[in-house]
Image (cartoon, rainbow, N blue to C red; front, side, top):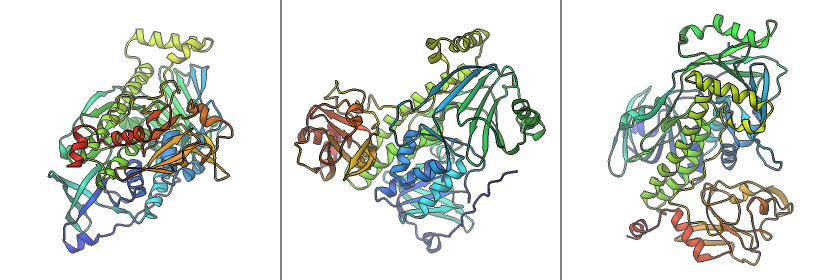
Length: 545
C-alpha cells in the first residue's frame, strides 16, 4: 500500500471552451510530466505564454524515473526549481558494482570538489512533478489544464488545429507550435504518423519500491549474478521517505502478470535482505525496454521531446535526463522564432542537435544492455572475466558497463557552432555545455552558471574590455568580464576554461559554448551570435527578406 497521497488537480473549463471561439496560442504542450512541465517553465522564463494539456488530474503513479543528473539540476536551477528537488531528494556520487558476492569496483561520478550540485539525486517522479506543478502554478504565463485530452490534430503551414476532449465535451483550439511530451505511447506521434525505429530487448525487469529502514549507504549498488538472485542482475537505489528502489532482472520467459503479485515479489526481496527484514511494498511494475527514436523530431508545427521522441533502457538514467535537455535545447530557439528574432529554420537545428544526442544515448544504452544481458555464452564468459579482473586490475574497470550514467552530449558537429578560435584552451570547445565554477559577484559568493543566465552571454578574461552588453540584430548579448563583473579568487574558473589573458567565450541561451576566441573581438562575437541564431547563408537572406 502506498504511503504517498496523490494530489488531485482541479479541472477548469477554459474561457475559450465556454465561448466557443477558437483561439490561437503561441505554444501548446501536450503532457504534464517532467518534460512537459519543464517546457512550460522554460518558455515562461523567456516571456512566452504557454498552455499545457494533460489527460489526467494528478502526478505520475509510482516512482518511475528516480535518478536526476547534475545537468538537469543546473537547468532546473535556472528555472527556480532545483533547490527543493535536492532538499527532498537523496544526493549521491558513489556507485558500486558487485559480481556474485564480491565487490568488483566502485566509482565516483563527481571526483572533484567545488560544484554546486551533486552528480545525482534520487527522487520519486511524483515528488519531482509536484515541485514542477507548483512552480507552474506560480507563473502567470503558464496555463496548466487538467483532464484535457488531445483527440485529433491537423496542420497547416503556420499552425496546428487541436481537438481536445474535456469533461464538458470536445472543443477546438489552435497553436503556432505544439510540443509533444506525451511519453513513449504518444498519441501525438501516432496522429502525425511518426514511427519509432530501433531495437526492443527481449528481457523483462521487475521494479519494486520498498519502504524500509536499512543500513545500506546512499550509493548505487549493482549486482551481477548475486547469490540471492542467481544468473541475473539486481540494482538498488535509495529514494526519499525511506523508499528503496530494487530492480530485478527476470529474463524473457517471465510472466509479467504473475511476477507482479506480492507472493512472487516478497520472497525475492527477502532473499536479498534476509528473512527478518521489515519492509512494505509501495509500488511494483514490470518493464521491457527499448532503444529507439523517431526519424525527425520536428513534424511541421509539431516538435517531439523526451520519451515521445526517443527511448532508452533505464540503466544509466538517460530517459528523463535526456528529455529535460531536449527542452533546454528547444525552448530558447522557439522563443527567438516566436519573437521574430530568428528564422523558422532555426527550429530544424533542434532535431540536428538532439537526434545526435539521442543516438549517443541509444548507443551507450545498447552497450550497457548487451553487457547486462549477454546474448551468447561467449558474451557471458567475456563479461564474467571482465568482472573478475575488475576486482584487482584497473584496466578492466572501464569495460564494466552496468549502465554508464547520464552525461550531456556535446554538439560537436552542430551547424550552430563557430569553428574553434582557441583550440589550445582546453576541454570547453564549441558545442560543450558550460562547466560551473565558484565565483564572486558584487562581493558575494556565487556560481558562474547563475551569472550566465538564460540569454546570450560573452565571458572574457580580458579585463580591459569596457562593454557591458552587445546588440546583435536586436538580440542582447551580455558581457561578463572576469575581474570586473565576477572574481575568480580561487582560480577554478580559469582552470576549467583553460583561460589565458584575453580568452573569450560566447554562450548560447542554453549555456552551451557556441564560440571561443583568443581575444575579445566584437565583429567575431556578433558573427557567432548570428550563426547560433541560424542566420547564415540563405537563412540570413531569408530573415532579411
